[in-house]
Image (cartoon, rainbow, N blue to C red; front, side):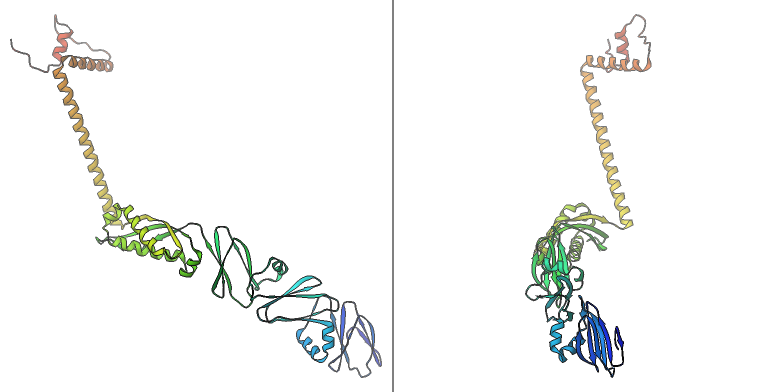
Length: 387
C-alpha cells in the first residue's frame, strides 16, 4: 500500500511532510526511512509499500521497534529512544523538556527522537520510597496508581509502614510515597481526647435484679507506635474492656449499693481499666457511670420507696416544727405568768391588732369601773383570792 503517493508505469511518487517519516518496505522488509520531501521511487513490480508516521512528541509501537532493531540496529539507534524500566524502578519521560509519561517497573516505551528531544529520569524506589516535591510536580497528571499521599494534621500522628513493617513516625504535613511493586500505608492516629460511649447489656446485681448501665469514657493516645503494635481498634477494645469491668462491679453489689455508691463504683471502674491499658499506649482520663436503667416494675417500686421516704421526712419536719412552736408558746405563757406587766403589754398589743382589723370596738367594764377593771376581767390567769 502506498500512502500519499501516485503511481506511474515504472515509478511511484511519495510526498513526506514536515514532522513525518515514512518507512519504506520492500516485500515486507524495511528498506529505508524517508525524510520530509517529494520522493520518486523505482518500483516496476509494485513491491514497495510506505507507511507514514508522525514523529513530533509521539511514541512508536514497541513490537515494531523490536523488529526494526533486530534487522537494522543502526536505524533503530538513529530514529528512536527506547525506555525500559527494571524492577523497583520508576522512569519519568520528558519530551522537549516537558514531562509527559510516568513509567512503572517492567515497562517498555519507544519514542521518535528525530524531531523531539527525549529525556529520561530514572528513580530507584528501593533506596527511598519518598517522592520529592520536584518529582511530585512533574508527575501531577499521571500519578494515579503510582504514588500514595497522606496529609498529617497537627493533632495527628502519622505512622509509615512498608510491607507491613513500621518505618517511622511522620511529622505533620504532606507526604507522598512510591507504591510501585510494594505495599505502603500511612496510618493516621488522632491524639486528641476522644469520648467513647459504652452501653452495657442487661446484667444482674447480687440481689438478682436486672438492670442496664451506660457509661462514658474519655481516652487519648499517648504512644502511637505502641498502640499500632498492640491494639487493632482502640475504641472497640476499650468498649469491651469497660463492659467486662461494669459487669464484674455490678455482680458484686446489690441494687441499693449500685444506686447509692456511684462515686465508689466510678473509682473502681477507673482503677480496673487503667491497670489494663497501662501498657497499650492509651490513657483513660475519665470513666464514669452515666445512667442506670431499671426494668419498669423495679423502677415503679423504687419510685414508691423514694416517695415514702420523702413523705416520712416531711412529716418529721412538720412535727419538729409543731413541737418547737408549742415549746415557744409554753415559754411565753410562763413569762407572762411571772411578769404581769408583760401580760398587760401583750393584752394591749392584741387589742391594737384587733382594732386595726375591726375599725371600732366598744368595751364596757361596768358602772363605775375603768380600763384597769376591763383588762383584769378580759384575761385572768389566776383565780381571785378569797377575802
